Length: 250
Image (cartoon, rainbow, N blue to C red; front, side, top):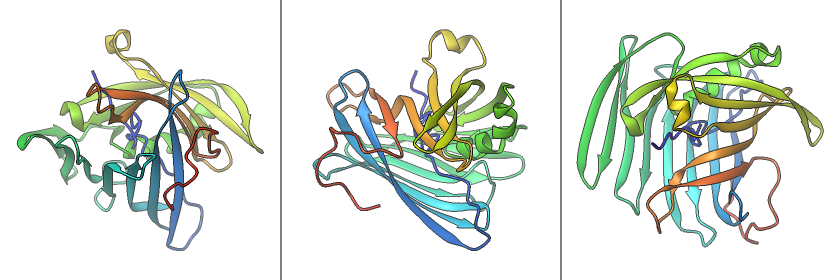
């Protein structure tokens, strides 16, 4: 079962961006450096561009770029309808695959999955503590005070690739220091028997910046050799030694 959160990414699903603190509209740009678990091989760069209106995340885009500059995937996000459920389009151009959230209302959201031109659709009810795709990151950030106090949090995530929603449990795993910032380690796992089948996601959030600093788990980019999602470590602060000399501009 492939759970795509990042962009939790979950890797995309956590497609991750920070909570803005400025009172004025602004754009943030940054990179994420993805390496393969175990080997450390550099896989791709996430290129993030996100727009805020005050503290509200309004829209954004994420491109997934191979070391040789090829575009592996891209995602667009629009939070104008809901702060936790964006209108979204994610596509893997080389795989003939897309995921979309095409409609959001107070009652429900419409999901679409496209594979080789075949479209599957499903409408899900809008339940309490529900997020979709990268909105999971926004909802998690709003729960950081509870997590910092050592209390677990349970949230629902609509997973477009599965045309369904699942409850996830976020468990505090203690503090660490990342650079000059105190950070909180968190483990994200299904809040059901699915946890026996789905590996957990480990993330690190800065307590001052309220940004995702590190991600470890399943990617939303597929290995072209196997058709399966990579298992990745993604760092949003430090470029690994295995990164190519030339990286895309943020």
